[in-house]
Image 1: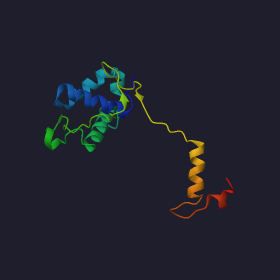
Image 2 (image 1 turned 135 degrees about the vertical axis):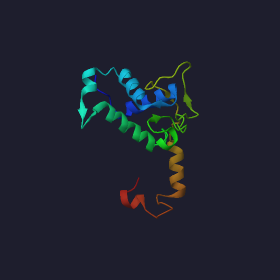
Image 3 (image 1 turned 90 degrees about the horizontal axis):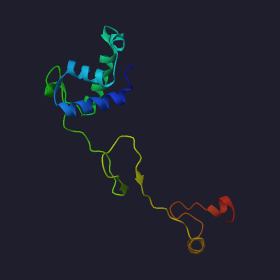
Image 4 (image 1 turned 30 degrees about the vertical axis):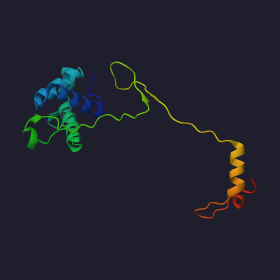
Length: 148
């Protein structure tokens, strides 16, 4: 099975570093290869002089460093990866109905929103009182579109 898209590789890197803390790069490569069940043939595919899967993992790591999620080598040490401790919590809105129990990526969630219906009589009274012109710019809806 080839290495999946970079977004998924990034998520797995973060998950592995959350579980194990600081790790040497070869161990991260092996854990990711095992996680995605890369065959020896997949691992043997080269991109320039390096195995392609390692290059892809390094690009994913570089993006995570740029996002501030993985610490730079000056902090973690050369040849080691660790989280910077700056992972943002997931967005949770106060009106979300979250299920009880474990949480899984990609499951649906219920979000309540308000829906407003216009009262036709109130609308007509408002238009009779305020007219059909925009108070901000003076645009006349009645002249532009005809009588309503």
